Image (cartoon, rainbow, N blue to C red):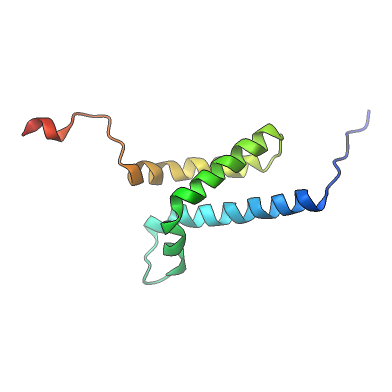
Length: 102
């Protein structure tokens, strides 16, 4: 049995191109807290949109998992790399509250 060849359309190419752009933008947004904006200023702009890019990355991750595309591995890597930035952004704390000490 021969493997089924996928038919690529303009829509699938545009979706792949947008997915690649989201990957690059989300990577720059994840790196923004670690890069000095005095040296590379445009990365800080991506950092401002981190939450939106992260949500879009999660949407592409879920879509590519459902469609069984191999590019979902790249979205998963960016998702994992972005978790510390996400936790720092929302400041999740699971320990004792410091407000109870006062």
